[in-house]
Length: 388
Image 1 (cartoon, rainbow, N blue to C red):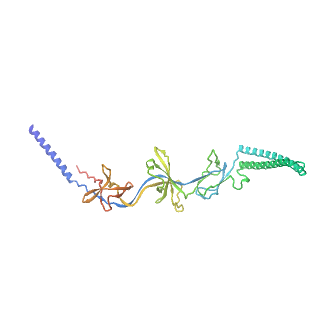
Image 2: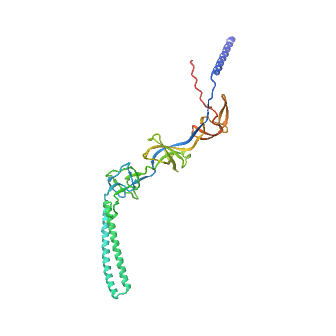
Image 3: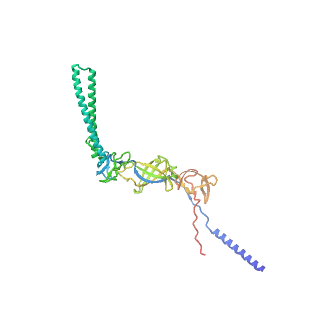
């Protein structure tokens, strides 16, 4: 029994020794890690963040009627270029029965007032003529004649004023009934004209539609939307995580999805002071004015989707390296790289970094363009599995 146990122990020792020797042989047979190196380059680095939005006119003007009625005729359509004062549409007035009755009553009342004032004026005129004849003969004093003349002048003035009131009542009746009056000249309320020059973006009404005038209780019906398409802006939103990185006057690069291979320059001129909750994320509105926009060469339609690259920092023609080559000290967090000094021999060099775009980073000092930097985090190729 003891002999058998001894044999088992010896066999086990030999087997373990063989396994260990095989593992050491296989380990020594592996290729040693050979580190590659890269040299710095002179390049441009742009640090930016992207906002999504659309291209819209800087100012849109809504044309609304001055009187309620029905669209009788429309003279423009979307896409037309018009000037201030051009006729856009004409409104046919449908008089309100209550307003028409009230205006008619005002005319009757004004006529009554005119007739009363006329009778009073005729009476004072007769008194004045008698008093003047007596004054000329020296029968009455100058004071009595002055009183008669004053009463005559007041009656005359009141008569004239009542005539003006009657004219106003008549004009008001005409406006309520037809939308215009001879006293307003050629520019009638029924003619809707452009208040600014620009392009017609939209005509949301059609002939026969009823429209409401703008007043204190109603915004009124929009007949047309006008805008100067030479003055366009980017309007978009940025996330709350990015809004702290941007500020007014930063340059923008605008790309429009519908216009390929073309970028538009802009300037960020507005950041909303208050964010809006959208799907659980706080979004801040931004606006940027497009610069040097030539609509004769490239026409940007209002509402096109666009992306804005907000240039946070920029460094042109500077010494750069791949950010993956940078290592950081475990204690000081000081960035450094390993410079090749010989065949697979490297030396640590502390460096100072500048602008980074997440792929490349600017090196302010610590290395030169001629240095070769160790690619320290390269991945070793997977070994093929042996057959069992």
